[in-house]
Image (cartoon, rainbow, N blue to C red; front, side, top):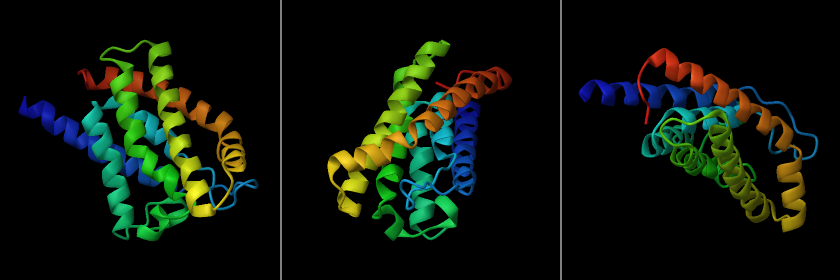
Length: 180
C-alpha cells in the first residue's frame, strides 16, 4: 500500500510539473491576446486520465499554488496572485476541478469513448471557469466572453484531449498498475 502511495505522489508531482512546462509554450491568440494558446489543457486532461480524483485535484492545485507564490509557471512564464485574478485567471481556477472531474467520470478502466467523454467534461469545466473569468475580470459581456473564450480554443483543446487520452492508456500500461 505504501508503494502505491509513493507512486501516486510521484505521478502527482510530475503532472504538476508537466502543467508548468506546458504553460511555457504560449502562442498569441489573435481573438483574445490576454489568453494565449498553450498546452496546459493537455496536461489537465492527462492528469485527470491518470490519477484518482483527489490526487488529480491536488496536482493542479499545487501548480496554481506554485504560480501564486511567484514561481513562473503560468502561461509565458507569468506568476503571482494577480494572474489568478486576471482575464486568464478563470481558466486557471478551473484546472483542479476539471482534473478531478475527469478522474471521477472516466471510471477505473475506461474505454476510449468514456475517457474522451471525461476529457470533454473537463474541458467544458475549464471553459465555464474561463468565460466567468473573462466576464468578471475583463468586464466583457457574457455572449462575447463565450465566443472569444471558447470558439478560438475548442478545436485545439479537443485535439489535446484526444492526445492525452491516448498517452494515458500507454502510461497506464507502462506503469503496470491501476492509477485509480
